[in-house]
Image (cartoon, rainbow, N blue to C red):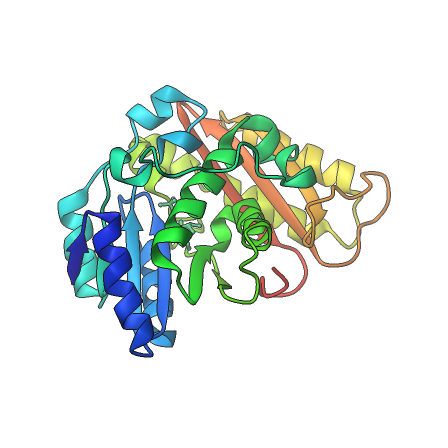
Length: 291
Ligand code: AMP
């Protein structure tokens, strides 16, 4: 695996690779890699000539400075894991390298309603920060494919929209990889290492709450399902940001007072102690290809 720290050097290297006919896939991450990330690397590697992983803890997307300060950094073991799993290139830039004065992000990326819903509402500015970093990564790498995890469902939709805003829809293919879970159902996340052993056991309640929504969907009103899932989380010590049942296509919330139908997704964000966890579950259809 080749490690690049300079954007221009990576860009030039990939220009030559593209000219030579090689296909490239980018897997952007913030490091502290776990098997969920690695499932993206493997999927990217299988379908492309070159797999490029980026590790950059992007200050622009943290609305909470203490969350940024405590974000785990495990670069040495990340490098070992990537090498073990056949990643070809690691891009490991500094903040200065990612955001030089010459990089002019848009003042505002028009994300429509995505900006105001769910993560957008609870983490003001978060998706603008995501767009900024991904705009820059797309400029540098110009990949054929871009791999994201369904774990961050709304982020997948934001990036899809960003690719359109940047006029790259025909050039960059977005690939969404299903969420990898621990054996008890907890979605793998870099933030899980911040949970103590009791919290770790409790954290699976998020998966149970989502499953209860899925199981009750055909015969219970969304309002009751959301109330039940919220209660389940609160009784287990969570501070809930949201429990929502939305249309998969645009995250429009369903009518809480009518039985829900169509391709839907349930989404949860909740704090356990200081750690904010998110997860989601498709309620109809087994994959996220529609994204
Ligand atoms: P992060 O490092 O948290 O920014 O995540 C980098 C990428 O890995 C994002 O596209 C995430 O959605 C994806 N990812 C994170 N956790 C998982 C998981 N448990 N399963 C699959 N993909 C994941």
